[in-house]
Image 1: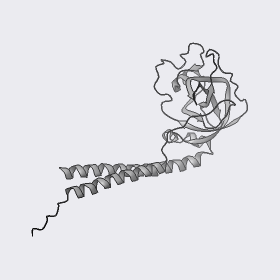
Image 2 (image 1 turned 45 degrees about the vertical axis):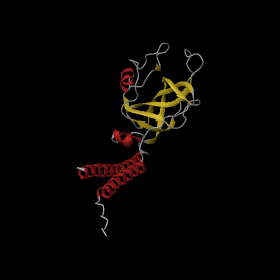
Image 3 (image 1 turned 135 degrees about the horizontal axis):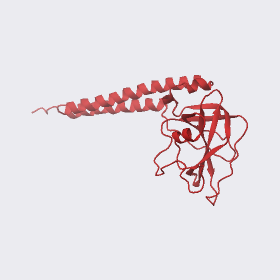
Image 4 (image 1 turned 90 degrees about the horizontal axis):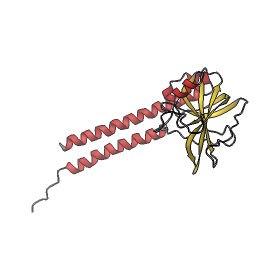
Length: 229
């Protein structure tokens, strides 16, 4: 029974180690492919969206004037404010992007919104992508459920923008990594595991499995009988 349990534990650990090692190779290949496509926005957009989570790129285009929103209840360095959300028309891409430009502080009177001036000239945005659900847990029923302003949002939702806007909206949320608008501070960091971290986890699981085997070997090893004189 003990031997069976040890074999089972070792098998699970070695399997997890192999899986993490394979994930490291896959992630390395994904990063190499994204690096090749980074200079071509159209090629990048045709990449499997699952591979774009956390992927960093540079997009060139224009922010659409007068199309901006403030994502409420954001905190940066202890300061309460909003995230500035805008509509971005990237060159060579058919769909428009919703882009999170970063944090802007709120004033003492929350009924008065910060003054927002988007650049009218073409811009280059160093950004990364977020796929899947754009928001976490929320009690709000609708994104624009604000007591004072229609363009203050409680959470981000692709279907809301797709329904409200007269242009095609990409399901990819773009998040700026560098400052685009003066006074607006990018602060989002995607949780994406690097190939090296996958390899570290692979080594960790392998050593756990190996240790379980060594401990079991010495624990079940018959003790030598003392010679009777």
